[in-house]
Length: 296
Ligand SMILES: [Mg+2]
Image 1 (tube, helix red, strand yellow):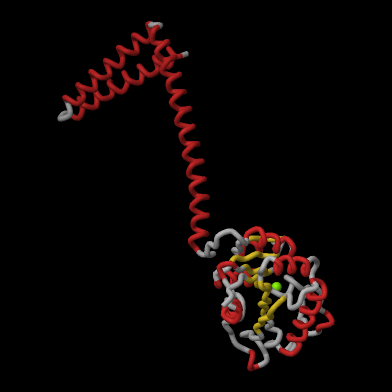
Image 2 (cartoon, rainbow, N blue to C red):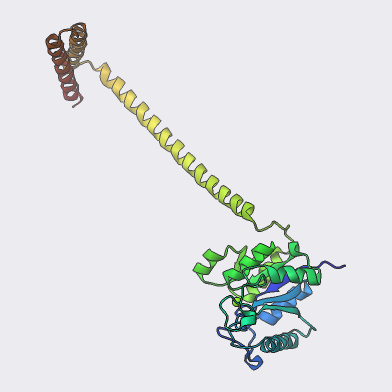
């Protein structure tokens, strides 16, 4: 039993241009650089499998026979360009759609992306090693199907919104770039695309932010301590120069303390307490005013 790596390929706007319902094989047009990049992947030992949603069958736009004809044409064009036989080994497609008009195709189906059914089926049919496989697709549902199948995914787009929605492992601007990413990453150990990896990325980012915050906090504290030391030093210098106002202020503070003590001793007699208390507050205020004057 051979167990090979594969590259799963979305079809429309990944390997061929198609913005509408394509049922006519004569309209098949390969996208730039696709055959050359497919040859590189094949030469590296990847088996190539198309996995495509063809809900147009359920919608009555074209038949399964038309889908097959389009696929034969794609295979023919690719083989002509690469000079290989069966460059793309198999085409899996899902003709079902829950909002179809053709009753026998109108339903949800495990093959319909973002579900991973086609990838899982191909892996079983062709003895593929999913841990060494990749998916290239232009839509978030493609990379989601790949993610659910446990393979690495390359999103083919330049659209920021798609990139944000897709959670792909890699993003490429065109097919050649996507193939180059696969070639570069193919020997890297497989890490399942699961929540753990996303979490570890988030944890690392959070740690970086925390470290930065901690550094900034330490720097602020260091500055504050230095400023306080400066302040104390200049305060000490000022104290050395004794002034009469400072003497008065000290006397006032002492008087304030004394009157406050009297106030508390007379706590039982509210009137005396108020009198002594007011005197204490007044003395303290005067002391503060004196110190402010002295500072000037
Ligand atoms: Mg597509």
